[in-house]
Amino acid sequence: MKSSRFSLALAATALLSAQPWHGLQAQSPYFGAPTTWWPEPNSGLMWAGKLHPDLESMPANLSDGLSQQDAASYCAALTLADFAGWRLPTLDEAKAATEPGLEAVRYFRDRWETEQIRALYFKGRTVQGLPQECRYEFWTSTRDESGSYWAVTLDCQEPFTKQFANTRIPALCVRPMDPEMAALARNANVDVPIATMQDLQAYVALGKARVSFAAGQYSDSLQQALTALQLKPDFIPAIIGVGLSRCELGQWDQAANILQAARSKLDWNNSEIKAALKWAKDGQKAAAKGKQPKGKMPAWN
Image (cartoon, rainbow, N blue to C red; front, side):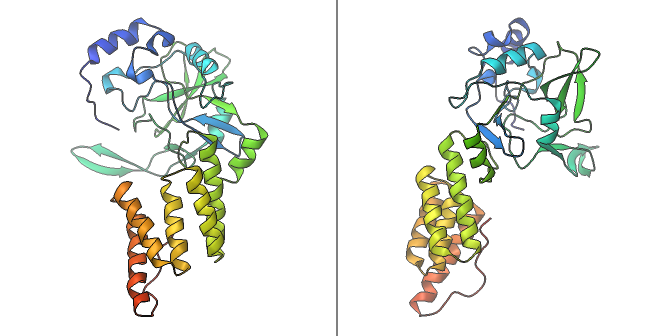
């Protein structure tokens, strides 16, 4: 969780306690609308990539949110990536999209220790605005016989809890994907929130590139990785795929050039880029002597 760097905590507290969600949207930096989403192909749903409000950047003493009714109203009014028709998830949808973790690390009695708990995570996804603390939850639309609503808590021993409707916790909105998008999502392995349909298509091309690479079809993997880059410039997994495909085709100079540029411009400390670049440079040296590089080519994860 990011440390607090905000000096207007008291003023924001007053805002949170005095105004409904629609008034806060324009006045608080923590209530900005999400700009990304991720597709969940098994359920046919797309999920907003960020809680509302964004508790990751909110100071801990301002842990607040929306009533269940306001959360439902917020989702209904949301337009994200030109898509309308958002809503709160049902309890069953939230359960289908999450999975239990095996352990968590906590600070206890002046030392860090690993504790086995019933943690909960989104399946392979990174949802922004979710600090690693149990008090943060999000609403579902599922109501029980007493009038309370079910809520989801990630990284906590009690991942599904009942809350009174006027409890203030965040919203995480969902909407159904149309058939074309659902078909793309089934062919993509999206593990982070994305911003556009073009991003989704880039992941589809990346998936095809990986399949071809694993089959030893390096010309095809190169073309598919290049297609992914055309759709999503600065797409690091695709750049690595281009580099390693060129290495396997003996195009060592071209591989080293694209990987060096990616490391310099995008992520100097990326371990996968570094490993691929080293392999390309080793290949350059070996090729100059009419040989193949020693060792094993790094994995394309």
